Image 1 (cartoon, rainbow, N blue to C red):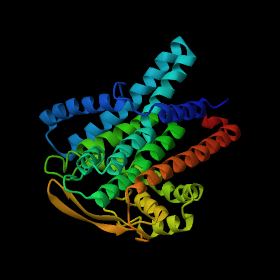
Image 2: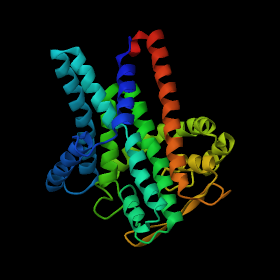
Image 3: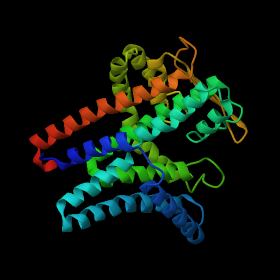
Image 4: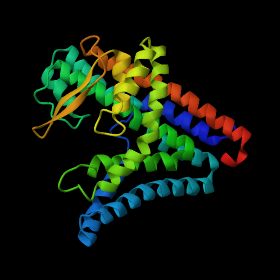
Length: 323
């Protein structure tokens, strides 16, 4: 195969499907998180909590993560090119989260099937930021479905796109940006200014992947036996309703495919936040929609993988400078 990026991306995707994210396995995100925590303390002590220090923080962590992976690839290549390929595959694999998303949302579904609401609330709390202590079965199901929908973009589609464009360094740089957004990209007094650059960078990096979801979710819906027409129309009609510039699009596409309504009131630290309704309630939301959402996530991921790899192969074959 002339284009080794295609080989590495395909292998990394398959490894993720097989292994997921075992907690005993060292993960780059954990290393990035620890480095970010240390750097935050250093920069705040020197520069204070402001947009400039936050921008420096973001550039150093995201750029440093990509550069570190690039350096490891080059170092491995000095010893054996096959070792360099293995390093690339491992890092690309860790950028994907499809299997882990399946496992985590699957715990919520299994708890609901057993009728164990306290356990389901706890399991949901592991994958969402909202309060879960008082949620009923419908609201637990809504939280899990919304999480699967949004994470289809930042856990699969976006890493896949950046891996195709720039290999393992680009995929890990994206993962670093996503990690920083979850750590400091909050509108709290502590991070309103310091986390501004991390939040904006995450929005920019997810802008195209989220809009690609509008195209590929309907295709995957047809493969899963859902309504591609409804998925398409709801994605365009309701995709812009969310406060997030990107999260509403996959949520709307998911709601349209499943024929349910998402959105509503979420509580964060006891404070209610009203989210607009997304989708049409053609039927009540139920626990099984969590598994339907996961199936659609997998189908969308495979469709995009095939399309992205095909485009990459064509470009490399016709334009050698793209290698």
